[in-house]
Image 1 (cartoon, rainbow, N blue to C red):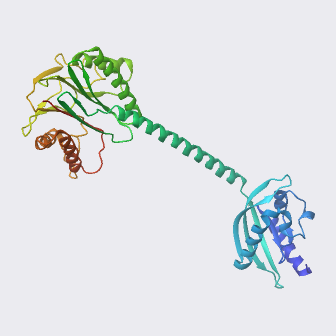
Image 2 (image 1 turned 135 degrees about the vertical axis):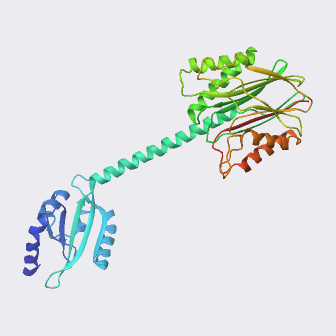
Image 3 (image 1 turned 60 degrees about the vertical axis):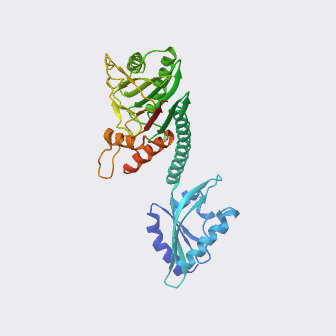
Length: 382
């Protein structure tokens, strides 16, 4: 290296020593002609092992081709910036951000000023974030699997279509989310068939768990043969005392139809009115007499149930408010009156088609997807 070149390097050396980054200067043969103290500390070598040697001498053979490509790119562009690493005496690798610029001295000699910034902390943070993201993704998959299992369990609580003797039952259930708070049952008991639809407040896992517990209690009480008012009393006490929470409450509609299909016993608690319709006629509404359950100890009315005589061909409908509290684009609610009209217009159809037509007409009225769980049971007596 000529005297003029040496003087130029000596002039800039003082400035480069004040920087908070490692700096080297390479000649046109990629030999190091200057290295500041910070760079020497970063690479962990004394100056005599660095100066006068090509930069490729420090790197393991497998990494040299990549380094040469980056140097060639700098020669073409006149500058460069990339992430690389500095090999350490203990075999480690210090991640660095390399910034390089090609310059020409007064005599036309080409040099490269290369700065190296230690980005170890940044890389540790990135690795920590990456590992955290992997754990989150793993946990999200586990939660999704749990939700799917919960949804399958919840689906098992949906009322099922059955044919009991000459009495036909068609059902429908749709959760607004993966899992919902509605459940229903259709189950024969002795000389009658029991039908129930229940709507737990809220949505999601908590509501589904409460629904599962109430379902289990309901089935146990039905097997004991309790009447509908006593069933409501028991469920109200169970939620208030057994679950020990005021977060959840629920509405319920229950019907019991005798084997001959002529007598209907109905009880509702804070639930939309049941409907009894003769094909082509105007539906008769049967209102709930009790308040919502799970909040007040005296929610069940003294005369909680009512009995109605049915005629051949009558159809009995119980449903959750996902069918009535649905809105069109103008934000008009379908309501009980609107659903009643759909029931009247579809009541002459065969029972499965009536059920399907009701669902489709409610969906056609609604603007957008359903935002509440929907349960429906339609019974036809002989």
